[in-house]
Amino acid sequence: MWRNKLVTWLLLVLVVMLSINVARSWVKISQRAEIISLTQDRLQQAKDQNESLKRKLAEVESQEYIEREARNKLNKGREGEIVLILPSVSPIAEPSPTPIDTSANWQKWVKLFM
Image 1 (cartoon, rainbow, N blue to C red):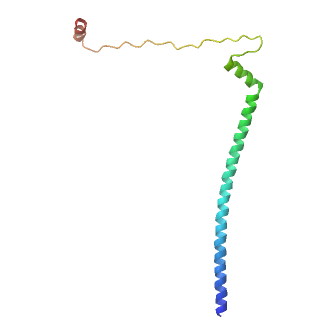
Image 2: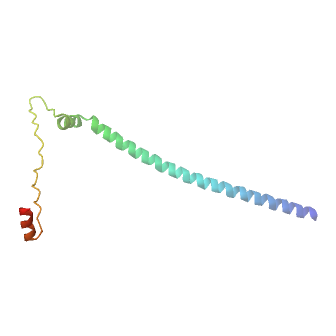
């Protein structure tokens, strides 16, 4: 009789310990799955950025880009072409408005004679 109770208690303790270990493992697996998901997102962003940079590099290395930059920034041209460099246009200065004297007429006469 006491042997049956002992076996029952031992089995119960074993089941509880196994349940705790399974729960811990499940929590670790779910945390690692989240880490994997975040890492995959970062990897995809890095791949997208890499593709964008490859396209930009291909554009910069193209002959058309080099020629356009030489024309625009270095004022260069092809053989036989004449490069015109126009002076930059400065904005026309607008005259500043003259201040309006709001003092009374008699004060203006006093200022004139004093």
